[in-house]
Image (tube, rainbow, N blue to C red):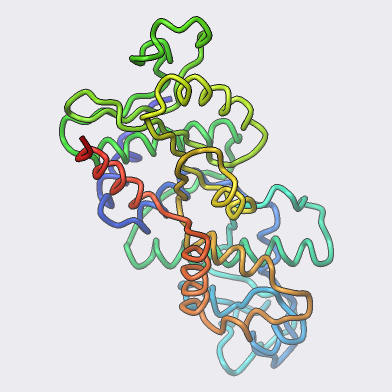
Length: 325
């Protein structure tokens, strides 16, 4: 299904802002989590959010949400400020907390530390995403539900449009080109009917790179390898790259991907997700990251240590490759 005008407009408005592009693509490809209710913690009368976090040994920090613009209310509808709750009961948030499911390894029925890890990391990324959307005044309607295949196709189409609008005039970003239409592979008997994912072609009609788009990095790696074999055999001069939004396997993508280079939709957010996800049981997130700014900085440091690069670097690398003789 082709992108609609609203999708294109959102991409167009934020081409030069890599975090805004991350927020747009993630928002449009939103994978609704069933565990958003974990933010509605039980608070005691006169207890502050900080005190409730300590008592409950939370793996996330409610300050991340308030820093991002959320407001917490007690069960009587009174905003929770430094004075504490007027009434005991579950905390409610405005706007309503909607987290994105980022980890397929922890089920919706998980309990204990698995539940703590998954929900805390989801809330961390939600806070960062919401902060970016709010500060850039991005108006985006997140879908309530979409299948994995729909999400993956939309991510690919958004990525293609982003590249088309970001690369120099005269460049082409082509999708599902038969491998037999690529010079060097065009008369090979063992290429078969396979197709490329995305091809980048410069204004001189040179094949600059082949790019794979993967919302997640999972079991279809065999199919990907089957596409790469003839390309690397007959066109070893063409780099093969991947763009992904994978979170739980992001470190593995950086270390083990068979592509020449990998790029992440939101490397700093993935770094923050990893750090929160790895927080030991009994360790308070608010002691480690007292505010959203410290969490975001942690994510950037983690992404840099893993050499996770974003889509802005992908565009830069492709442009630079156009200068190579």
